[in-house]
Length: 92
Image 1: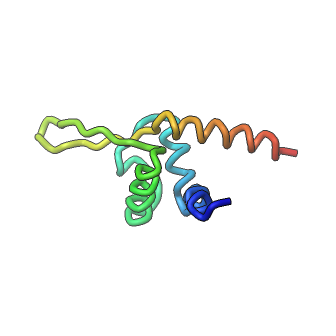
Image 2: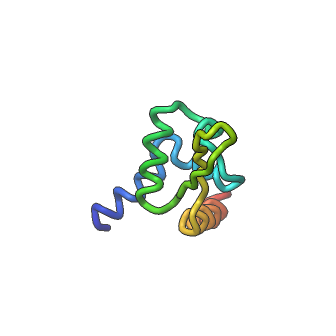
């Protein structure tokens, strides 16, 4: 397996990565709504966005401050669907 592919797979095993993906499967979330510490969460969101598993949208709130909402991409949904199938196969 090429090293680049191993690096991509290792992203899913990093702290909070799967937790973020599973939370976003339920609904889009703002940064503060996602579980985990801010430093790690910020790092994982950036990494997950770079590989195309999540995206974000920016909207204006009443006070003029932008609100950023994170959501899964189609690719992110497909990865979680594949993980579900894998977990079913591994269940004894």
